[in-house]
Length: 259
Ligand SMILES: [Zn+2]
Image (cartoon, rainbow, N blue to C red; front, side, top):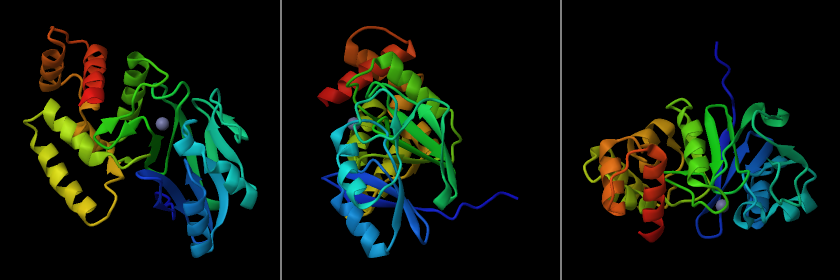
């Protein structure tokens, strides 16, 4: 029999469009990428929860800026990527490491997914993926410290996870991302359906995240660099003929920056 993991994942909002994903049961909570402390502290006190761990995907301030203040109130381990400047880190992680949060009964494997930053990591476990600013709902992160080759390989690594994996990314960017995806692949019906559903969610003030990996594979252009329509659009953008997936990825990533 499969073990049911009794853990809920709650979006605590920070800044304009960040999500601090908060894993919780009746007593304990762990947070992923607390860019701000205040909304997390408010949630914990309102729900009478004890913080038991902090997980960071990468060093950007909107993902780690709240850690020091959380530590003033809660003495907990801070997990994050080895090789990124996160002063508050107590457990440095790299590919293949595991994070066990005993209080919540969850266990994550650490995936190294560089590209957005030099040593960005994702946490995968309990059917869920916490992927920071690498894979977004219908999009992907910008290349700040890595190359297109690295980001493409990182996205392919995530793409290999099961289709029913829930994808928890760090920002609510979905509708804008869908707008771009429609420019790349105007003909896919799944994209229109996704836009309709996600627009309704946003209109109701609800998050569009998590999505599933299967949904990303069907609609996210950055996971579809071998699709003829994506290759065709990349070629139009570049004004040349290329077909290698990394070149296609680099072209649409560049296009998205100017979109
Ligand atoms: Zn970032």
